[in-house]
Length: 150
View 1 (spheres, rainbow, N blue to C red):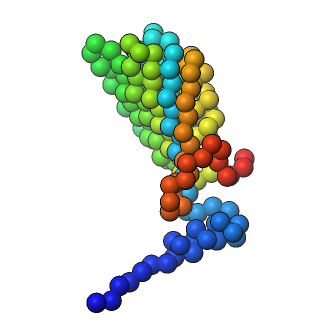
View 2 (cartoon, rainbow, N blue to C red):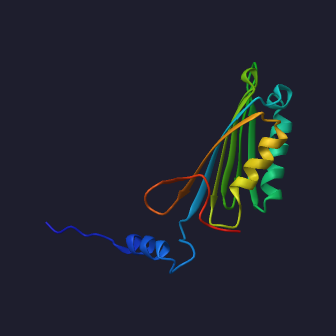
View 3 (tube, one colour):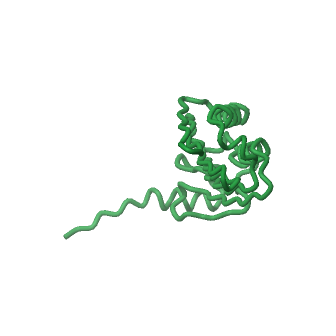
């Protein structure tokens, strides 16, 4: 029984690590936010949340493809903005002043940390917990800062 192994991805990762290529085609950045102490009035307003998420996507240079948001009863909003570069999503829990936000961008054109800052500010978050990952390089790497400079 023969085992076929495709080493091309391994060579891409090695070349990236050695600085021989700037970025892999699969390179992505993923920013996960835990936002606490947000204004309750903002978190229950589906139209406000949609406006914030779509505007932040546009302001950071993303190409918005589609957006869909849903208001829950008795409260809370979930939504996603599909961008050419991937997505921004949010789930709110107004009764706790909490919003969970996910920003995933492919390539290095859109800075998810900039989007994270803008969303946090517009929701009036008092406490911000942020997890950043570089993805598409093989092993998931958890980072405080990204390798790619802008």
